[in-house]
Image (tube, rainbow, N blue to C red; front, side, top):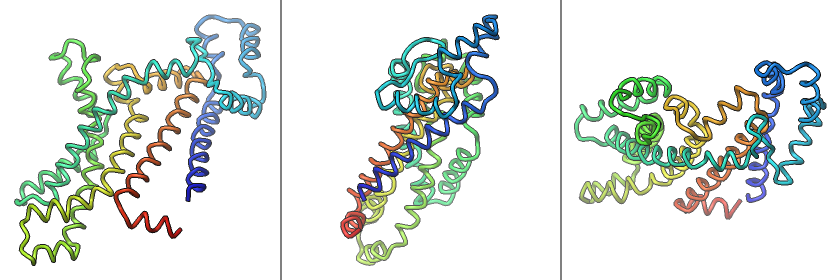
Length: 301
């Protein structure tokens, strides 16, 4: 089991990084061509620059050199800023982590609340209203929501870029729908379990039944889902950071992609792949810790 997870983790990181490497190379032009068009560099100067950066070498040689650098701890240097990729990521990581952390807190609160109300509210009106909100947050694209919010609050906030809670609300509302669906499905399944029916027949208080027999078991599914959604937020802030003009990893990824800054794009993808694998492992560990059945199945595997 451990060996399989290690192999899967390595394969995931390798595949994500390789796709990014190939994607950048199939795009028309290269970083030198983009810089030459802006700075009026001659053809001979551009060729010398390609030789200096190793872009004149075959793709497979560039690929081998890239992985050799990775294994030596060298993630490359930005072709535009001249800064090491690791330093650029370290400088921009904190704003993205702050945004993702605030967003997942908001998403967890609203997601659990909407899923709970949609599944267990006493009145049909509340259940339908919560279900409608879930469907709306699933259907509305995040770029549309973000743009609308910018128009609504731009005249009320002096510096929109300095406000963390506004983009966090947009991201949190968008992600809360997925969590709400999970909560709703798990609650609907839990209330139909035989042990819940028996608890009702024994005359236990509804509050006790919900806390002990309904809510506690669904944590096995919800907590790992929250961890995975946090990973999605860390890697999926490009649109939100762009709309709200915030600094962060998403912003430098977008800029580097447009500029064809190969080392930066590859470094961001490599870092995000590592984070995804780590969070997936944490989610699996949480599920195993919370569910004795999974522990038993792994012991017998």
